[in-house]
Image (cartoon, rainbow, N blue to C red; front, side, top):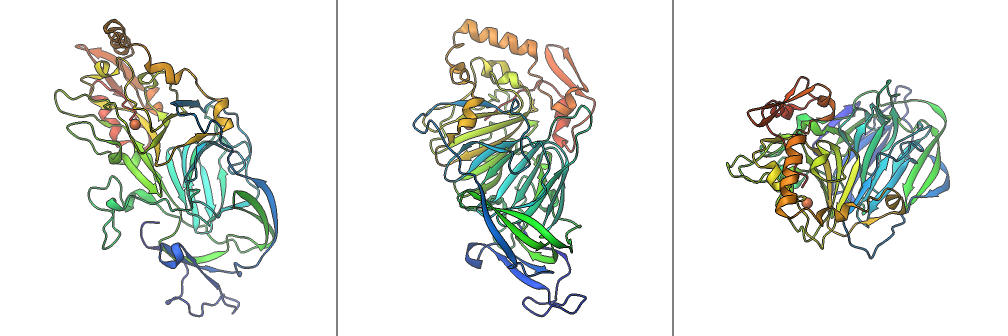
Amino acid sequence: MPFYTKLGKLPPKRHIQFRRPDGGLYAEEVFGTEGFVGPTSTLYHINPPTQVIGWKPLYSTKAEYVERDTMRMRHVKSMPMPPKGDPVTGRTVLFGNADVEISVCVPAEGMDYHFKNAMADECFFIHFGTGTVFTMFGALKFGPKDYIVIPKGTIYRFVFDKPKAGEPDARFLLMESVNGSHILPPPRYMSKKTAQFLEHAPYCERDLRLPELPMTFDKKGKFEVRIKSRDQVHSYTYSYHPLDIVGWDGCYYPYCFNIDDFSPIVGKHHMPPPTHQTFEAHNFVICSFCPRPLDFHPLAVVVPYNHSNLDSDEVLYYVEGNYKARKGIEQGSLSLHPQGIPHGPHPGTVEATLGATHTNELAVMCDTFAPLYPTKAALAYDDLNYPKSWETGWTPEERAAAVATATTNGHTGTNGSAKKAAKVGKKAGRVTVEAKSKPRGSKASAAGSRSKSANTWD
Ligand SMILES: [Fe+2]
């Protein structure tokens, strides 16, 4: 979406005759946003895209929020969520508001239909699983740790590969811009004159994986397209395969971006969350906390200072790392720190991480500018001890014990995929990690060969 591209067959000019091999005209569609002054693509269909029949409301997707009047820290453990539904019906909203809905999906079955979200852009984060998402713009192959951004109105179908023996069930996190805004790279990363990614941006055009062939399915028959609109999924029937585009060009299309290709920005002193920003939409941002060297001032406190993000609620989804650094947190956890109370390191964490040189944390954050509410589903996996985990542990004795425990544990958080191959040892009182293999694309994991690590969890 950030820059112009094209795929397939196109006529030399917009809005001119463009004929199929049988002599008929391809059906042009301008797929535009923001009243035709926002990002737009121009598509060429084999069949008229208006030729749809038989709308039928299927089910409501309206999230039911609870405890709307309660402001407190929350921790939801999503790993126990059992597989259910397909990559659309299996989505469970855990937190949300009028701007964004945050859900987790562990699909149990495939989709025998296509889907269009006509009310939101969708930003997926694939935690586990590989597969292909077939879209009207072409196919996107995906794997673990890929973001997939699918803009509003795109027709698509997810096909997950069957997990191999020993592999976890497919699982993804999803952030939907239910306020109708578009999920885009932060404008400060882009040239105002050319929309090119600037040198200070932590990723650029080469990191984005765009739709590829196959794109065109020229078939007649009955095809179901489920369309989400007005918090309701409708079933429509197409008399032709809905992925019938032979060519398109423009700046509005889905793409993939692997979080390991995010190049973290590091500093002499602790860098704030905006340096980790990856995407934004109206009233929320998405950030990537990735493995990286930590602050290099000789007296640096490498974990975040206590902070009040006065205008934001903050959700972190924990992907990989040393979860002992935050009490109770485990892989697949979602923590919510609301505006209204400060948050920061657990008791003893600051002292225990002094001198750490790198972090192996991997987390996705969604910061919102309006309060987030939990759903009933979130309460089913709610860890009520989490808000209490800052209550005690502040006496000198307790903090010394925390440091001793951390030293024993080594704060040697390793990326999950590297963990099996990591050999942990102590040399001259410093904890070292020798990563024998690197996780896919994780250039930062080279830091794992140096010394003490810590997770910072902003
Ligand atoms: Fe924070």
